Figure 1 (cartoon, rainbow, N blue to C red):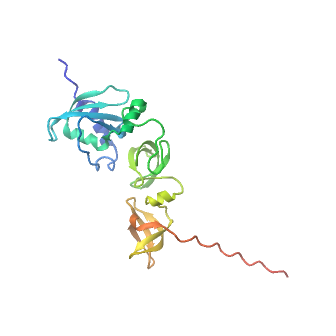
Figure 2: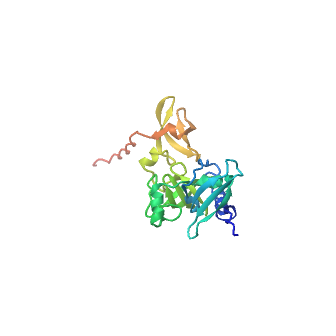
Figure 3: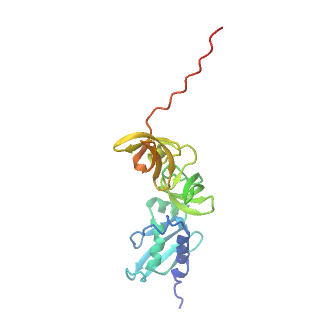
Length: 249
């Protein structure tokens, strides 16, 4: 008698490997959602969906009955340890009605709706943006959109999920919306909250974690959180007075 193929040794094992190939910020630090039975989970970062039918218990080694779906492949149903399943779910979410509709109309098993997708910040698939890295910012192309999360192909060849506005920004001049979301360029004129009052200042650095280096009273520079910064309301400096023209001889 043929036994059902173990998901642990097929599709789910491949998904687990893909999870650990993603950036630490997008995976290892993520918290797995509460496990729900008989609902479809969309995993855009893995280009797959999955459904959990039952588990024998709550322990890490207990077995769960899972079916996975990937583009161009038939569904694979089998058993997987609960711990491995929860690892995969760190990059999944319960499929929304819009995603289910997109999948039914040809959007693919991962439930990505067909047609242009625009996320937080006004970015869409195909746009080139800048994303944070350990060494600063790097150009990247958007491959998928999910609200404020963007799956990008970075200039160094990596493909990861980045959130906007914390890890992703537009190339070129920032907008007022970008400033409202806590994004600033070097030398932007801003106001900084110091001792309960807003004072004029300037951006001199950014640490990639929401801290900006700015001028503070006393001729010093300090690192302050983005919550203590807002765009400057001071009018631009007046143009210099034209040189006096020599009078007639």
